[in-house]
Amino acid sequence: MIADRFELLRAKHTSIELMPTPFWIKELVDGKFVMRYINKAYGKAYCIPNGLDPGEYPGKTDYEYWPSDIARIYEKNDIDTLTRKGSYIFDEKVMDGTNRLIRTFIKMYVKDQYTGKVFIAGMTIEKDDTN
Image 1 (tube, rainbow, N blue to C red):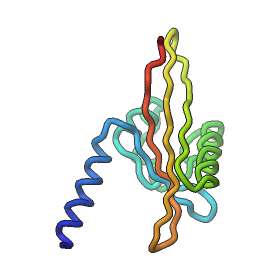
Image 2: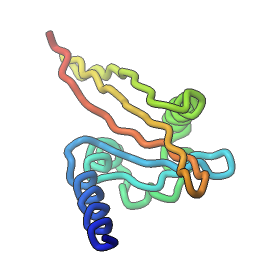
Image 3: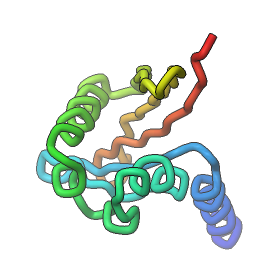
Image 4: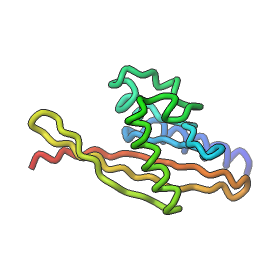
């Protein structure tokens, strides 16, 4: 039984790591959101294009990793998610020359039933909005 649970946990982690959708988990620690996990797609979509090393993000707050203007936006969205204590879905439009790209963010409030720790998990889905 324990071996089955371990295999399922490992399969879940591998699935999240390999999915093409950026995914992340932050933990609320002393009133600050600390990045605990980003998958490969997150690093490829957000860190590398901005000249940042994805391996340096886990363990840091947004203010320790991103420029303050970006960190402020991320913090506001995390606080909104925390306040709602549920799922939070919103769109962000990014202009790319003649095309418009819409990025849908899905953020989720998660409270560990055993430890009481609070996490914010999120993912993004990109859609081409050229029509």
